[in-house]
Length: 284
Ligand SMILES: Nc1ncnc2c1ncn2[C@@H]1O[C@H](COP(=O)(O)OP(=O)(O)OP(=O)(O)O)[C@@H](O)[C@H]1O
Ligand SMILES: [Mg+2]
Image (cartoon, rainbow, N blue to C red; front, side, top):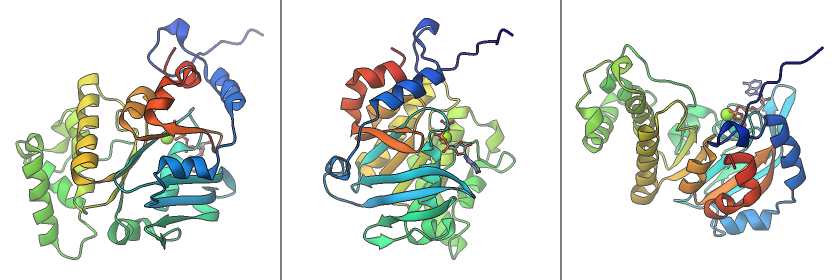
């Protein structure tokens, strides 16, 4: 029986240049090289701020990450790219405490935080996680949404002060502070999601697919905001991005993840210029 051929792919190329998912997996297996910890460490300038060592993690009995390692220095940015289902979001989930960790550890500033709950990660380890999915509360105002970002703080006044700081910085949100979040544009909503995470003044931002579902002009805006947070406020950013071109242009470091393992790692610029990465993830 003839099977309907469905082509799904990556990148921004024309249909005839898009590589199918199966092809990406097959080709990625071929480029799989041993990425050593020394390579990964040197990309972080040997200044470990956050490190993941020998992580074996997954969901219940389903192991997704196999001996995964990651190193990032303070104030650096790192982007994970790779095919659907490779485990990119699972890396962020594991840092934040949403997965089952069977072995290995997550260390932040020499402190082992592997078993901290997400709440403790946010409150005591300076890690904020910005969801892949649309996560604003549609019937709350912009200001109320921001205050929700501080729900874990001991007193509400602190959240109010932090929210005012954020609103002062992002006038676009300030102008809409009393409007319901459901009336915001897609780009404004993403800005609200990012700003809400800033209420806890995190050192490390975990960002899953910041560009997803956004028009090009908003994609640029989101990357500008993240760039400002990294360059001017010294935030350390670990992101996953399906738009590999944007992600690698942005990030200091890029990892290519395939089937729960890192098969390539380099500076963002060098990965962008790598023909194999181009063919598989950048649409030609
Ligand atoms: N909460 C969960 N419970 C069980 N399995 C999960 C859960 N989340 C993800 N998985 C599985 O883990 C594997 C890796 O998923 P993950 O979301 O990390 O991939 P990804 O690289 O982020 O993919 P995508 O590009 O599609 O977002 C997939 O097989 C997925 O089905
Ligand atoms: Mg994902």
